[in-house]
Image 1: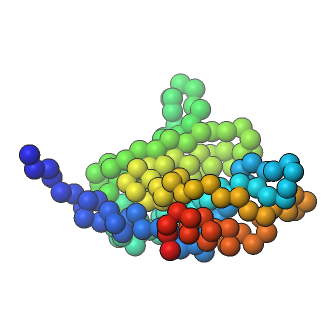
Image 2 (image 1 turned 180 degrees about the vertical axis):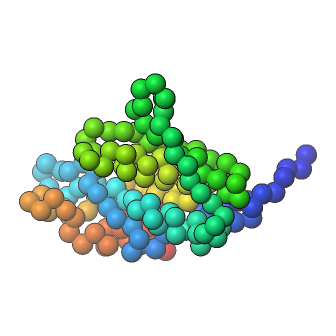
Image 3 (image 1 turned 60 degrees about the horizontal axis):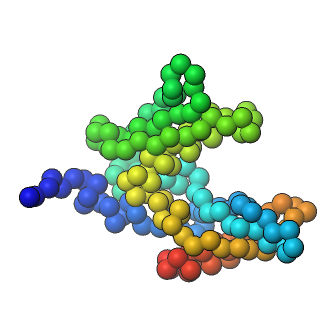
Length: 159
């Protein structure tokens, strides 16, 4: 039984290609109470995802649309991702009170990245092994974040 080959099937390897480590940021997950280390959560800015879609599909060949859900009492957003005007995926994002003035922007970023992950873009970030790194509790930031990101890539077999 033969299936239909799509543009996304043909470009899947390019869409799934890991981002350069310079395009990755980290934020602390858990912070150790007994040591100066924290769990590194790797992520990329939505513009990095947009750049990948532009690079692989062409800037005019994809678009994202957003709508709140549920419509009666919005608690989140849905992103519908279109390639050549065909909906290829959806992702959801939460309207979280803790995000302050950026509540809608945060929800848009979250649902867009989830819609992209559904077609392979950036999905590997959720699959990398957990990595702990040196963390300055006073400044609330990682010490040498690029080295921690490179370590996560190495341990995940990316490199």
